Image (tube, rainbow, N blue to C red; front, side):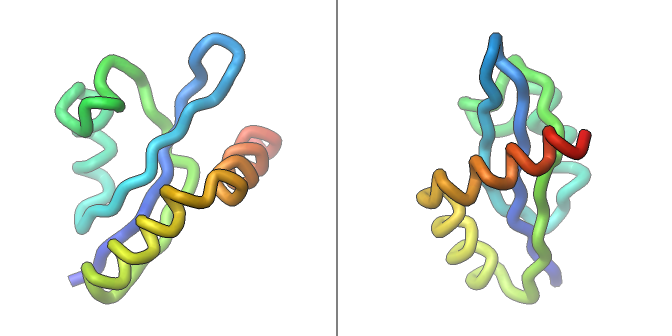
Length: 86
């Protein structure tokens, strides 16, 4: 089975907020977030997938997700790159 880490983002007023997670079914997970069934933090907003990376094991995905959640510099760099290219 394959696993993904992902970053979703949305614009709130004048800033961009993001959420980092992992899943084995990326399409379903994004749909859940946008339908209010994802994490409590993501409810009530429309999210856009801005980054994804595939892993062979759940353990590797969870380790990388943890690193990405704590690395705000990298998250902001990914957000900036995505919105400049959009």
